[in-house]
Length: 152
Length: 152
View: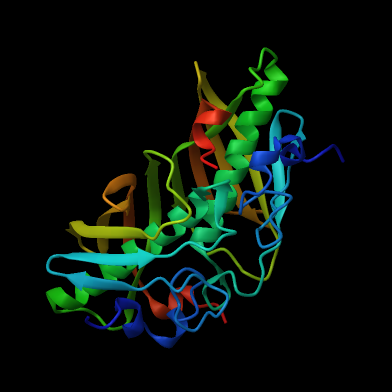
């Protein structure tokens, strides 16, 4: 397996609640390249429910968001010419919940870059439980100077 | 102050990670009527960050989602004629992140019912830090039979 995309993040991004390797209270999502798409597996915890047996929509939104921004940042590096001072952050997030997602199984996220337009990268993401598509998302990211979004 | 909307949820909905009063690991968001809109205040925890000093987008999405569904369920009751067997759950969630949201201050959510179309209720939500609008959301909910979404 190759290195998790989030392991290449700058220190300031390594504490993200959704995917920061240094956030010990967070979800620590890890995304990987698999050919032309990115893949992540997430194992829900018991308390991540919406209703008994059903994964929470906020948790689903969080991992789609983090997998989407991870994909955008990694895609820029892969395409070359990346400005190392830029970090791609979420401008908007759309999630469609297609059916209830079981809580007691791992979920798999698969994402692809849909569009690159200047400093704006749009990513499509699908969330599966086993082979069943449970949710889809679109993440619009924008490249910002790291100093612009770190306030401390 | 009147009773939190989520306190009226059926038992099965009281364990939601975002707003369930019985989820001791969750965010326990509480929403209230204030005239024709609903209001919730959320105090982020230190580990709810995206970047140092900035509130995580997944947490923002979660509380917008829970405040939105809370608004839909409460609005149906308020309008009368609610079918007690129906629960309004999220069909889709759109969040626009307008500017970084400070981590070290409470955020306020304000929501209004935007549209009612059969068993589909659309809610608009705004998230403020102090008086500053930081994010907006649209939550499309659908009324489902409780037995249809509870798998355990």
